[in-house]
Image (cartoon, rainbow, N blue to C red; front, side, top):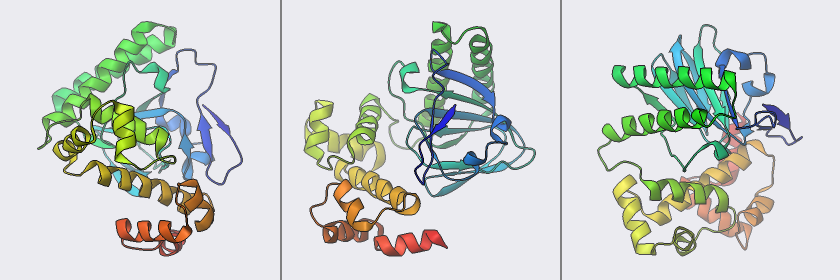
Length: 270
């Protein structure tokens, strides 16, 4: 992994030397990297499997308590930082989106039952061995895809609602790409080649939220990230997010979050 850019919120990019876009490492390798102790973004995925000790991981304003048997997922663009508590041990695989055969959406933190933990550990060990030989091997992608599907099935098995589907993953990916350009349900339906009614019904079934609400919450997260970490003015941010006037952005932020952008920024600065 390599660090680039001089923005207030650091961006870490995947090392170009890893041909297939995969790397397996102990999380302790990051302990001596000061940039991971403060909020930062990456342009690649993280998947951690906690094996020993306890610690914390902060992901988009939520602090997760880590214990053995937990799987942690961080997608590109999310803002996070590691706690680096002494004694915490975890195996981490980092990979570019190109290493995936298809989009995958996981929960940020999942406690694995014993049988699924054994399977995930075996698959991660196999992936590490394969990457050590050559990360160009297509077997590496097979190990990775199987590992991710094992985790997807773990989440689905414990869900009260139907699990994430291909449409869910494609919608999430579209939001990541387009959220600063559009917040219209019709625009995302066109991207996904479905009707607005289908997209809304799917979101209600999967998350209990309308497609409009899902888009608004994703836009709110984008705004919060910038307000908390980028030092941008409210006026400039409103323009970046596609609002005609700063007052429109302020009204949107207050309606969805219950507080003003200024109040949120002041709260984060404490």
